[in-house]
Length: 267
Image (cartoon, rainbow, N blue to C red; front, side, top):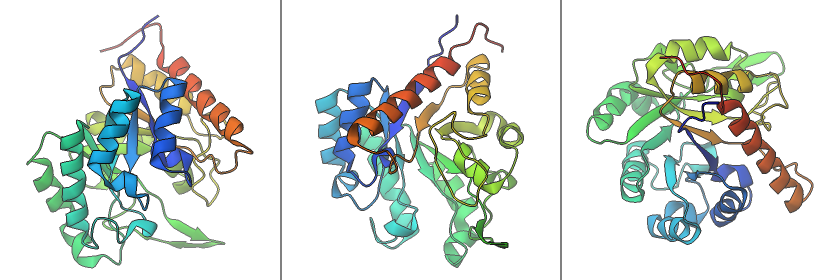
């Protein structure tokens, strides 16, 4: 049995609306290999010194920083999107994280969207930190579809150096996740593992509870010697209690480790 070196991390977004400190406590208690910090309205998530103190306290490395790209984080670390990315890069460098996760711009961020592909490439050339651009999805309401991202939600249409695949987003966009992974090829640097049913909502289900090829993707990553991180970015807001949430996150970790273990390695 081959056990790959791939680290399995917990996204701090997985405990929302609880704070970053709770995510570190749960990740350490359950045996995750590290944490991805979602920078959002929680002041701890915005403070590298506070994050370093949590990492040291729990002896848990910060493997990635998710830049504040969400609608609810428009004023976090400035209203200028390039300033946000520079601060995310600086935080990653200071904390020892090797990846910054970033979403493509919203369509109404016109100047940022026009410059995004060239700008991300330029910033990636200035650091050892990888800027892994994440696949998104069309926004839907009833039978209507709105293209909210520019240059587009399918990030494989652009020549980014590194990608993040998010399987919940793949489900929401109703695409073949494996086809997208094939297009990403060796530029796939980071995985957000969560499941989805293909509804119009970005569900972030516990892996195994939707229809996405979570197990098959993990097995493929193990066989091919994937060198990035796998991050559980799941929605636990419907967990009935703190104990049920802990059980959900333990199940997600066990699922991931089980399917990362494979009898053979190719390549």
